[in-house]
Amino acid sequence: MGRTLSEKVWDEHVVRSTPGEPDLLYIDLHLIHEVTSPQAFDGLRLAGRAVRRPDLTLATEDHNVPTIDWDKPIADPVSRTQVETLRKNAAEFGVRLHPLGDENQGIVHVVGPQLGLTQPGMTIVCGDSHTSTHGAFGAIAFGIGTSEVEHVLATQTLPQAKPKTMAVTVNGSLEDGVTAKDLILALIAKTGTGGGQGYIVEYRGQAIRDLSMEARMTICNMSIEWGAKAGLIAPDQTTFDYIEGRPEAPRGADWDAAVAHWKTLVTDEDAVFDEEIVLDASEVTPFVTWGTNPGQGAPLGAAVPNPEDFADPQDRVAAEKALTYMGLEAGTPLRDIKVDTVFIGSCTNGRIEDLRAAAAVIQGRQVAADTRLLVVPGSVKVRLQAQDEGLDVIFKEAGAEWRGAGCSMCLGMNPDTLEPGERSASTSNRNFEGRQGKGGRTHLVSPLVAAATAVRGTLSSPADLEPVGADA
Ligand SMILES: CC(C)[C@H](C(=O)O)[C@@H](O)C(=O)O
Ligand code: SF4
Image 1 (cartoon, rainbow, N blue to C red):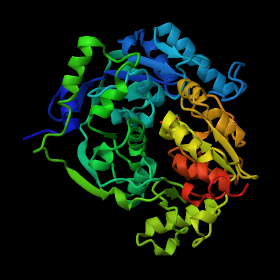
Image 2 (cartoon, rainbow, N blue to C red):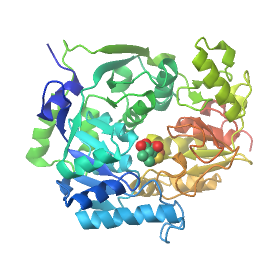
Image 3 (cartoon, helix red, strand yellow):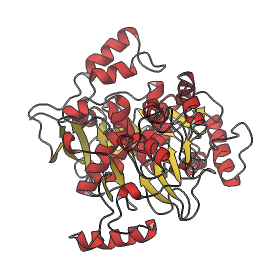
């Protein structure tokens, strides 16, 4: 019987397989950031161990870094300690680190692909749940805990039970103005935040093949919000074109050999998935969340739901609780919800294409009077490229704040946080209570919806905006 893409990648990495035990997998790339690595390095130090493959390990500073005054010492003592600890550990154990101020600094899931380190057929781990992002290249990529980080640092292997396989086939095409973010939010809303639990999910079908690499990363990034172990997409010409010529990509004969192998990384015709879901892309419209988990979402054209309309009692209670926290009334059109802050950034939607898409909406327009727009590139390279293209000027002229690279308001471990009761439209991936600051209220949106919302001050899509110059 044929094998699925994930089974092929898995099989290529099994170091040891014993019945009744998890497989021992070889790890090709280990990404590290300051939040989940300190205890792992402490563990190595205590046991007198070295990092087994520093050459397959890459560290960046992302969660705690300020996005203004990044050339000054970090003011917050906790953040400063985490960042300084990573620097000390990287130096002591010989791990490559891109610190604040370095041209390759940025969110770890933006930096890996950007450098060409993320490649098809790899196993990639990081002490971070959104490692699933890298699955967009046809890699098995997933988040691990700190004790597992230590295990990988010490051995470059990881014991793992084999997950079940699922195919999400997205037929048809996305309409204009509908993005990968809307698609994944719609999928999670349809099937619940536990819908992917226990599975490695392969996204496929026409709508997925048509996506750029960056849009594919947005989909795979949010696999974890759907409960999946990992999400991946078969590599194709789009993938190869994206990787070719990047600093860490294979070159010359090595490139040809790599592509020849990568082309074998597709699910065989006769392979069988444990589960299959089929969606029609043409039915997806701009999608936003109204609640406090990524599955509590609805089309932008809908209204805040009435908890009583949920058949499942648990969903009903969750919706009631969410509406209370979010300060929303059932029946309010989502388009009438007024937003205080718009955040464009994160490993979900902080890449150059996201900034281009948002800038195209903002260009020639102004951010609404009572609204604040924060634009935080996912990496220094994204920031520099955006500046080369003049996107920073578009944002600043519209009244936005143009910031340095990092996780920023995605989770507010740095000074970029919401005030209690403040409402955001955010291109990030989590809308949990307090995620962007204590008492903050988050609506997850695409970069297009974020930009349009910044202009109108209420949840909006570009189609809701007056033509540029109409009100001049
Ligand atoms: C801090 C880190 C462990 C965490 C994660 O695992 O995802 C963070 O990146 C997040 O998005 O919540
Ligand atoms: S941008 Fe957000 S989701 Fe991504 S790694 Fe940082 S905190 Fe986690």
